[in-house]
Image (tube, rainbow, N blue to C red; front, top):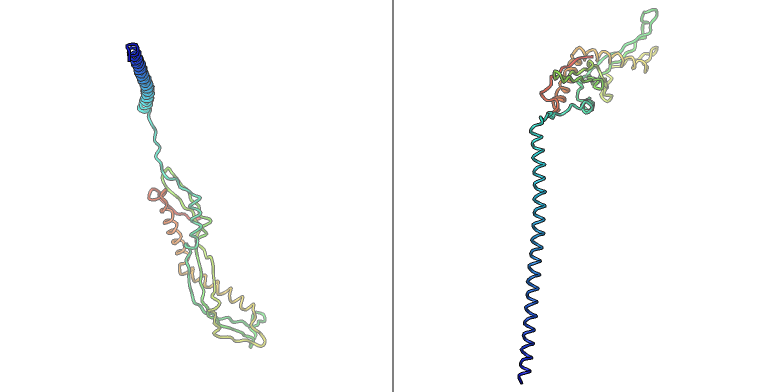
Length: 245
């Protein structure tokens, strides 16, 4: 290789080295620029977040200060007395409030033809029956009313007086103990109707004499008292009184 070729080769190498340096410098400049840009973005975002946080803190401090300076009225939360629900529950316990009086009875029916309030001889007819039955007494709970006074925490229960609700005969238990028919005065279905009406009235009077109405009244009051005091809204906070209408 002559001198001219050697110089040319050296020139090419120097040119390549110079171009490489320029690339490295450009790359370094770009990296510095990118780093500066990212740093600016981060700083700007942080500054914005910091300002937002400061504004939120200032808003909360102002709200707290307002709460401190403004008196707050707190209304105690207490359960309300739902009269509609209570009336429905009262209807549901209607059967529980009754008192049942079970009995076994026997009675005789006699009858004769009469002339001017005199029994005609040889016209008497009679029969004697024995049977089981039941009488129920209670309160018409559909007529019960409640008056609630929040001032003195009282509940007044107005209820009707106890009464006979039903009279039933067990037809399978009926026995004919004696029967005397008469050729001139036969036993009829009307005789049985009269007999049933008379014995029903007599049994009801006997049940009343034995205190069935008083028991029914007290039983209804006890059940209503247990029902009312079972409500959390009533509990022991109210005084409950009963009146009869």
